[in-house]
Image (cartoon, rainbow, N blue to C red; front, side):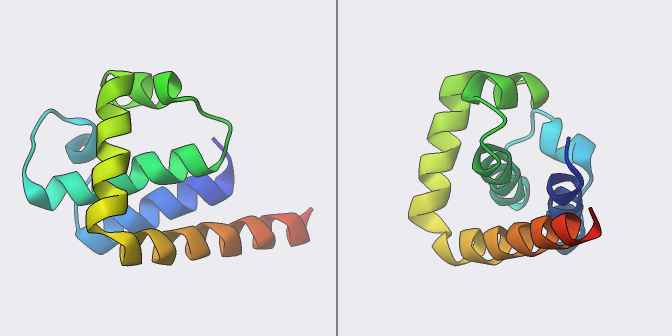
Length: 98
């Protein structure tokens, strides 16, 4: 996992005050769904991970990932923008350090 991805996931988890175990768990509370979908979106954004890879990481089927991503785009477009910008900023910092 690249550092920008790691930092972005940590930022999402901190903002929603949950743990990675909550996101990877089976619970479907609304307080966990949005950050879970955001994590999936950021993984997908990196283009390093396929839907199957993300599903394997989060113990889900690739169709669950597809459904979650479509729900996220429909219900939380502002949140997507915020974390995409954060990821890009972290990626840029990473490039500058190299």
